[in-house]
Amino acid sequence: MDAVAGAERMPSAVSQTREPLVYRHSLTVRVTHWVFALAFFVLVMSGLQIFNASPNLDASDKSDPARRVLSIGAQQLPDGKTAGVTTIFGHAFTTTHVLGYTSDGMSGEAERAFPGWITWPGYQDLAGGRRWHLFFAWIMILCGTAYFIGGITRKDVGLIVLRPSDVPKLLPMQLYYLRLRREPPPHGKYNPLQKAAYTSVLFVFAPLMVISGLALSPGVDAIAHPLTTLLGGRQFARLWHFVATVALVGFFGIHITLVLSTGVFNNLRSMVTGEYRLGAHDGNGV
Image (cartoon, rainbow, N blue to C red; front, side, top):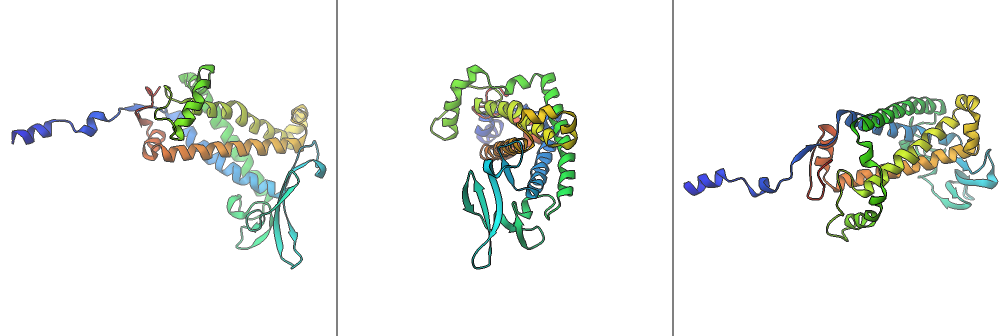
């Protein structure tokens, strides 16, 4: 009985080694994170709807097939069937049922760059796509501004900026993620790869996306044409906008992959309640 009572009073091995919970993300960060994610999701889908109206990208100040970077369309085959064709830097690929000739959003197939299941609205609607795109673009800008101001107030922005001292740690951190190194290099709240990613998003790709988007607006172009000229013209602005979007989609893809692979419940809890349970290599959480 004494042994049993003693065992009941003794903390379990799990509780002895369990790392502490820390308050990692403020309410502002959590709210802007989820609203930003929703806005970006709608922006990508409505942006592809807009792209379908002119499914090509030119490295030029105006539409120029001789300087075409990307083209997505369809062509008739000798047997009468239609094939989707994607051309990148002059190299053509058959992409039927995926790109070029694919879902029309109304239970059929038609000639369109991106399928209905990945555009918003699903059916072809350029005016509707523009309205959704503009509305959520401003929501994303407001969320980004609130996040940045809140980060400066809390002095969190400095924690996510890549510094010269972080550069030598980039390769060891990547080796750790690839399971080629047993322990990561020492770090605080954000590891060096996270800092590199956030720095590129906050100071390169997100501003490029916003600036190129503004340059594509006829109203902004009318009052601030030098901005459009700086980007190389409206067609070049479309190209920059597409490149920035692809980069941000790639960032979110990697972000989601790491969330899934490093503890889904713990990561989601930190973005819902703000509490995060530190791991063995998570520094001090700040």
